[in-house]
Amino acid sequence: MSLLAAYADATYYQARSSGGTAVRDDAALTEDLTSASRLLERQLQVAPGAFNSAAGTRIFNGTGRSILRLRDSAGRQEFLQAVTADKIEIDSNNDGSYDGYALDLADAWVRGLPENASAHSEPYRALELLGFLSTADPKVWPDRAAVVRITGTWGWAAVPETIRAITVSMTRELRDHFGAGGFGAQERYDEALPLSTQTWRLIASAKKHYGVRIPAVA
Image (cartoon, one colour):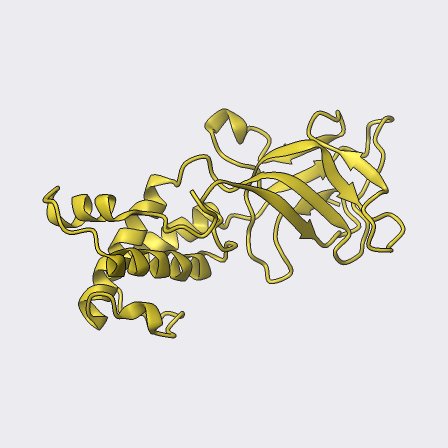
């Protein structure tokens, strides 16, 4: 699955919307499912493709603290499944070369948060340096922009069922409002979106779960 694929495909949409009745899988439906996926991301404040699984590299600003929230400069959440060996890299000399440290989650002083995420088949949302350990090096993330580079597997191993269901609800309601295949071109990204109260409630609930912030730690 590509990074920016829709969170639900036409077959899933048809099953949820038509009681399992087969409907022609047309390109317009796929386009609308993809557009709804991008609209949902904006509502939840997650990065594009955040619920798909993809290998790649992401760059983050440091904070001068022990916890690095995996959010970009726009505040959008990234989800981290696994780190490639020695691929948590730091630009220690502030010269654009990430050669200061080579860390991963096998290092005793680096852990993913929430700490039990993997036990529940969920990705990490932040990384913590356990600076109180004598072996910890570094003890905090440098307080500079674009100082941390992480290569690994991002997103979710499987798109959460809640996200798939909301994508279908949004697509169905927006198709009804704008016409099948027509809403993808609409530039309406805020709460003016013509969605039902029930769908907005689902979105609000998902935002609380997937946008939850890691508690601040010095």
